[in-house]
Length: 268
Image (cartoon, rainbow, N blue to C red; front, side):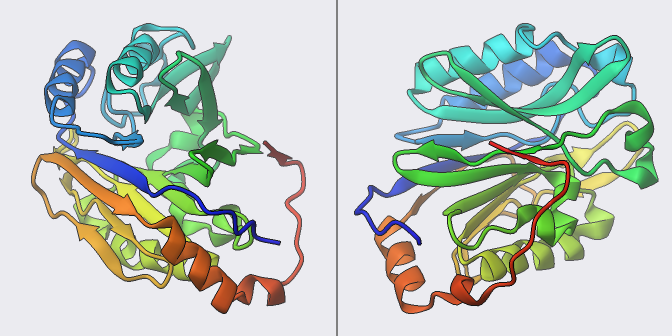
């Protein structure tokens, strides 16, 4: 049963920006500049492949698990006193590349989630290896599930209406499919009875694909708490634990959900 312990609110910062292909130094410099605007956040979210831009050139852009971009995340987490998350290409072994979401805590400790659903239409499944582990992490008593971009299209992978308080998706979602992004995010919130955040990049990528941003936060009934179009910046929202807990107590639809299991998946 959902734990109704009184919890503090959660302050979430979404960082929306363009990303320059393969120019890690320039990208980290720009995000460093933007992060100066963060005030009192508990959780800071960056777009998918924030350091290199979304690309299938896995070998060229990959870093070691303890590489410079991961160390940069650790430094930012320590400076901000907040958890910060972004995805980057990690070389996990010989010929083994992952689109890896890194969860960096202020004390320097890390968690990671490897993107499960690889974007077939772009050939991501040919260059990267999918993850088989779903994470449910705790921050200030909140249960948070981190996911990446294309994962949004697969509701079973996101599903956990009983225990999840916040789902978030770090994305490089093109403008041509922005309607799907804007419809699926509230759907995930409604069906999982939880807050949902989606962070996307802006600007054109190296293939000329435009990205509209549309970074946003929705509450547990799918209502918008924040929606940014294509402006660069840091956008913060405070999520109410009390409102969420009251809603889950008064509308416990999760109790009538069908039982299911995901084969060959590690829950962690």
